[in-house]
Image 1 (cartoon, helix red, strand yellow):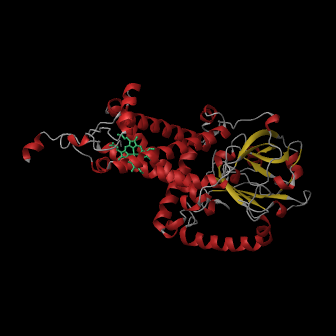
Image 2 (cartoon, protein in one colour; image 1 turned 60 degrees about the vertical axis):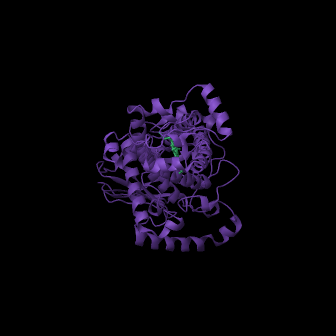
Image 3 (cartoon, chains in turn red, green; image 1 turned 135 degrees about the horizontal axis):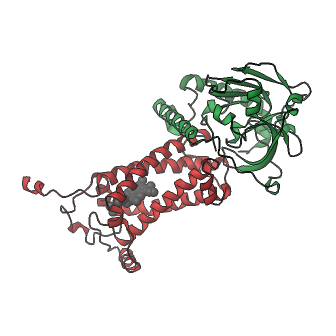
Length: 217
Length: 249
Ligand code: HEM
């Protein structure tokens, strides 16, 4: 026991990643629910979100939740991105790999044979995570641009003006929801990753689990 | 927003009275933010408190972001929205009007000259025109064409204490709102008398509307009745129900 502790390996994912991931996930869900509430006040498409799926009870409540969650999400995002860049985590673990590896992993995933070593993301995960991070950044930026079209006028201009930016913000939300459906389904398919994301896990403790456990996370 | 228009307008006055009474109850119990959380969290005071604390934080950040030098974009006449939409907390059929000749703007609070102003006095001052985008908190927006007297000029004329924190607006349609002094002194904040080339029509706030292109629609009151300069936080019609007070764009 003691001897194994001497060479205690780093828990993965790092606590920075785990804590900011869950704070970010909660605030993102709050942003989506309250965003739907705000959308319902003046829909741009011919439908409204069902009241049970919205947060805030009325427009003013939705806005209060949306901004409260925004600050939490931005704080978690800054810590996560800062850590990801400085620790090399993004470069090492999230940077998408070449199309060949993606093709291989996709083929394996479809046959439910994708390997996933602890602390190591496969090509599809890398693609999805990098993609959703970019989309989340665009969501925040387009959201800021419709919140502050005067003070951050340059940002609104970058997004093509107020009306276009509003639609971009909505489209990015849709992409995040689509990601979430896949992401949560995969996490439930391979519960060990869920456990790992909550408690962390030691790569040396159970490296073999990774082979053909039956699913791509 | 406008389902059951007919039924609603028939019972609107009654509804509003009930709504106000409920609101008042909320304001008394939970600092006016009791309606914020909705759903099951409705009765959870700690959630309400957290949300209203965050809302105050948001207000502070908005004030920090605000610059008196930064101007709202102005548009070509070709971009004006036709027809510019009517919007208020009541239906267009309930718009209240006054006789422009008899209308006076009351002036109060931290000013050296409290005499009321007539429309003619405002007409005698230099007017500024702007074609800017009005953005509603609901998400829609429309481009309109207002002209009038810069609020900063008016505040100087009445000897307002320009270091005071707030400027409070009361309206004869029982609406009210208030803004920070920095925004009051912004060059595009005007006391609008005209829409297009004509005097403001009743639907747009005749005889006077405060046009602030750096703030959301609910901070742009119509049917102005009084202006007060104050250091006591004045709140406002929607702000007291939970919209963030700063409401900046
Ligand atoms: C609320 C439901 C969510 C659940 C159950 C969940 C679950 C997980 C799990 C289990 C992992 C680890 C996967 C592995 O180790 O193989 C993970 C990683 C990740 N998730 Fe989520 N997640 C959720 C929400 C979100 C949201 C809303 C986002 C962003 C929009 C997100 C973005 C990410 C990213 C970028 C990673 C990789 C983290 C890294 O290592 O840097 N997740 N998630």
